[in-house]
Image (cartoon, rainbow, N blue to C red):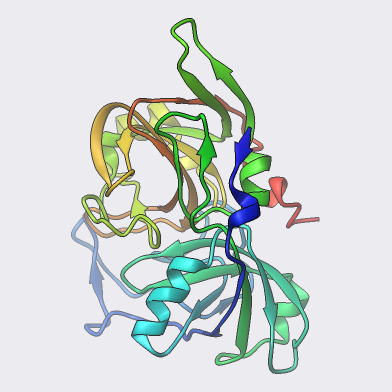
Length: 292
């Protein structure tokens, strides 16, 4: 495959470790009618990382490892756009200064960038520590790959995700990409219809028991690569028959109606020029060697 990675802009960005947040009303009422108080977005979450179950914790929208945000909303919009999954992050202040991590996802609404660090590094980090990101990936494009578009993806990660480029008997090109699960577009929820594909996420609803069993959605892990079938994210998140979108699970499950494990878009093709190859090991923890 030929890409334009040699022409991509590389920038140094910085933001801060964001504090944990909770609903102003304290209780959130789930789709089952039950009010709950649970840990949610933000903070330094010591025992939740990519590779862990998206359903394995008493939480709602939990973000693995470290949540990062700039306090200025305008600057944060650029930070959330230009930071890409797979980018290297470095602690720039505090006791953990010099420790390195990796961007593993983005979360819309709260507008966080999610960064994985080792447990030892996180134990020494504090809210408000400055995190630098070596941002590269925005503008990444493929030559001769039809309508496949790339979002939120470091070029090194992209080369690890795509196994091969193929051509069918009609001369149409497609990419073969490893994924841990296939997800039907009919269960995509919060974030659907938004045009902010270059940052943020949208959620996999897991309230229909039959669909959850059929696709093994209760086995989703944080950091899993998934193929959303009949979903086109080229110019906004929409349903389109035959389209395929590849995304990474960025935050954990939710009890709230319309919500669930959130996914950040990496690749999309309106024509379905992406061939998902199911491999249970297709997780950022394995692909980027983040858990040893």
